[in-house]
Amino acid sequence: MRILAYRFSAFGDVAMTMPVFREFLEQNPNVEIVMVTRNNFEDLFADLPGVTFKGIDLDDYKGFLGIRKLAKELLVEFKPDYVADLHDVIRSKILDKIYVRKGLKVFKINKGKEEKEELTDVWNLDKVQLKRTVERYADVFREMGFKVELSHQLRPIYKEKSGIGFAPFAQHKGKMLPLEKSFELAKILAEKHTVYFFGGGKNETETLESWEKQIPNTKSLAGKLNLSEELDRIAQLEIMISMDSANMHLASIVGTRCVSIWGSTHPYAGFLGFGQSENDVVQINDLTCRPCSVFGDKECYRGDWACLEEISVQKIIDKI
Image 1 (cartoon, rainbow, N blue to C red):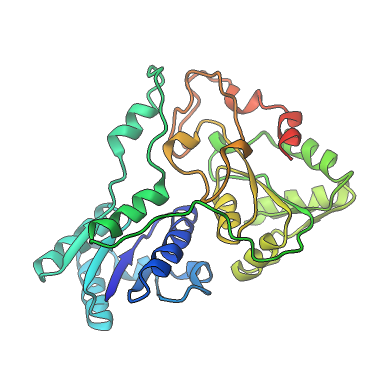
Image 2: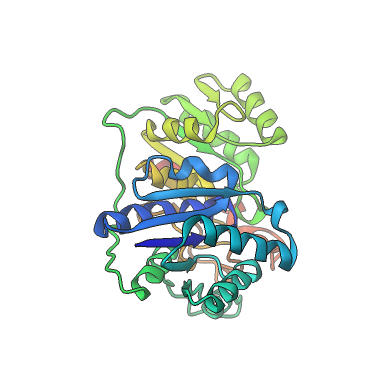
């Protein structure tokens, strides 16, 4: 039985599929998943038996004709029995329609858009936990008729772990602790632990290298590791500190506990890392406007970013 699955989005969203695939395939060993996503995500699935990785460059498949070309290529190469759309955006909807016309059974994720809109309405005072994204992925396979029960447990790779990882950056301002607080946090932690900085891109690398020079007992790994090496390094850490961003999900993949910091987003939207504990979440609980965003990409409704400015460094240290 072969399932063609696709998700073309951000790194963190794709990383969240990995622990779901792992447990699904352990419970259904006669199944193979072909995962179609961006080229540079291959190492996320490198050690996963039962997963065939198909990396693509989306620029090679632009517009309707490009997607039609992709649909045909995947069909010829893999001849799937079922199709799992784990993304449900315009690009994947077109693929779905093409495959349905060819007689394939297509199952797609229910992203809970309306629930999430209600959750992020600043006037909604009755906020509730929505279904976790990893369970939404698992639901796609359940609809196909497979059994899959997620453990929501971390699986450490190494017995001996040491050091603290710290990833102070996020894609959007609404997810990121002010840098002066992150700097202060690193300084305090480095008094008792070796702190490793994670980040990417020119600006982040420059910032973290300057922190390394200013704070003894720290080391910047930004820009120095490929994805496979980064995963291995995170696996060796005692603990990871991350914003609500990809590094939290990388920690989940390799079984490392993560203290996560949340601003305008909220674990209620379902994006807490697989197997991570709600007790390790750092957030301001008594702001009725939270969450105002699912992805942290909106401007602050109040204008003062209280959800991040009010987080004390001590609150994070207490979790560790």
